[in-house]
Amino acid sequence: MVFSRALILAALPLLAVATAIQGRGGEPSSGATCCSTFGESSDPAIASQLGLLGIILSGLNVLVGLDCSPITVIGGSGCSGTTVTCTDNSKGGLVDIGCVPITL
Image (cartoon, rainbow, N blue to C red; front, side, top):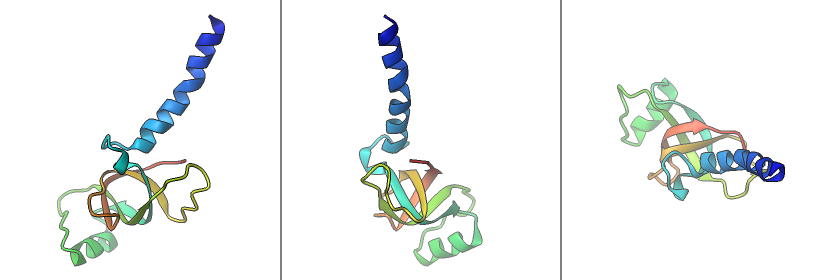
């Protein structure tokens, strides 16, 4: 009985990490990514880059990642940018919207 409780308690952190990596969008494709630029859409430097791409997020203060690539290996990912999980990465990694920084 004590062993089964200990096993359940030991598994909870793994479940939390797997949920975070899967992403808030609920799809495996919205998993952890490494973004070279990360910040609020209202940041002038980010807004400028979004504008060059024809993406207007004025009035929306959302966290975005620019120039992102998927992380396929947990630990030792080699990410020199910011590791995030995003709700919308439909732009192929060029722009990821609705991001939250995570620690792997």
